[in-house]
Image 1 (tube, rainbow, N blue to C red):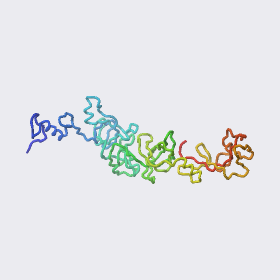
Image 2 (image 1 turned 180 degrees about the horizontal axis):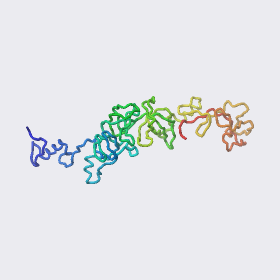
Image 3 (image 1 turned 135 degrees about the vertical axis):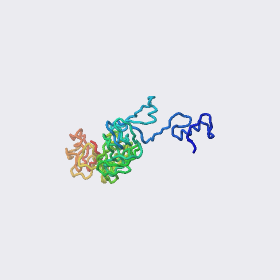
Length: 371
């Protein structure tokens, strides 16, 4: 029986046919103890998906408990701790808190760890965990803010649910999840209101995640604020309550989480919409015909079909006796003069006021939910 073939040989020897330094380097690589030949840097022996953690939650942890990853146990800039930092990747495990970023920075312990002790924790890869299923269509899992007991399902997150035994709305039960390093990029959102204006070149709408474009299983527990930038275009957001938007997540840890709309949410150019209304077409989507004027409406007027006795005259004629002047509000179908509406220079109907009477045929405004 041959002896140990993976052993060092004395420097200066050649066996079998290799200088000792090369043979010994190969042996080190095969044993997994060195980075490369001729170096004294130890090879990393740990699985990079499982790291040691120190239980700083203040209580004992059962196997597959969920913890927030807080700080590195060893400081790489301290000489006495640098090697331990590189070799162990050991971190402090605490109770998950969203305000401390643990919605995406978390782990699942792989063995029971008593308070203050060190144990192994999965920070990536495939692992069992207790999971509360909020919606059957949820494909992701997140920690529960303030609890180590289990995770909960979510429309987006840093763990993919591969299998779950629990039912929708039931108690937490066993599941298999795959922890990954980033949140999914795209979700569908059911608009809970009409769009809101922002100062500058943008606007926003709040949405509830949903399963599909038919707004199946709307998740009213999770609100996402979706930004709707115009990107300099002369168009307004065309989002009304009940629409389903395709959204790319930007920051899941803000309150509420923020995303940006990536589906076609802009309407046609404003002047085109106005022309359609003036020509008698139905108000385009994103516009609403109003009963009365307010500070955000646009009035469409006509000088046709005026009642008899109300003359239209040129700017050299100053006979206003037969003009119709009224203090009535600006409403659809009201016949009035501009001086009555203006309430300023022309309110006295002076000889210099040559405005003809007109009729408001339509009052319209852009639909939005701004104050």
